[in-house]
Amino acid sequence: MNSLKLTSIALASALVLLTACDQKGTDTTTGQKLDNTIAEGEQESREAGAYVEQKTEQTVQVVDDAAITTALKAKLVADDELKALDINVDTVGGVVTLTGMAPSATAKDRATEIANTVDGVNTVNNNLTVQ
Image (cartoon, rainbow, N blue to C red; front, side, top):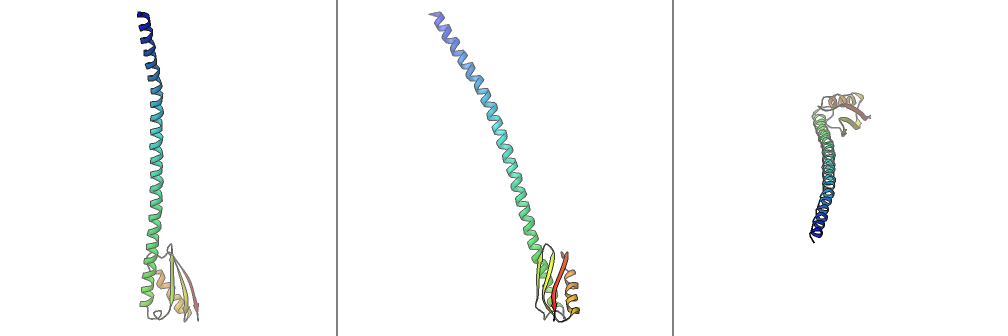
């Protein structure tokens, strides 16, 4: 009877030890999964941050372009030679495009000169047509 109890205790102990060994492997796998999940989350956070930064830069550029267009139109209206003209101003990435009609080559050149005085203007494409 004692040997049956000893055998039962030995088997139970062996079972507990085997279960504990199995759990250790699971803990490592769980730890690795946790590390991978954290790494993936960090990568996704970096990607989201880069996306937000890109969209912010694009928004700032659109606002800058609108400010350039507004400032240039105000300067054109304030100019005695050009104020009566209907000059269309489009700005993309600091590149200003002027379209419409100009009464003379001098007026066309004057529009380019004025456009170049506006902060943020990189290039002026003067597509005004001389009448």
